[in-house]
Length: 80
Image (cartoon, rainbow, N blue to C red):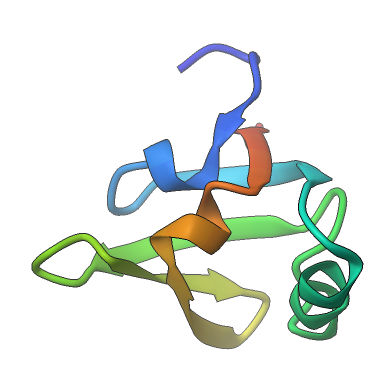
């Protein structure tokens, strides 16, 4: 993966990325920020539900389940 941005939903299990931008409506943005998902936050992808409808991520010490459509709104790049 290069330093180009991509969607969090495109990441594979065990991928570690940095948040570049949050898209979407302000209510959803506020909810994501309350979980620590904000610009420059480091996210580790822990896994996916069988249908890939949800993904489990780790932000800091907290594990969070995100819907695929929410993960589509988070732009990330490889964490170095």
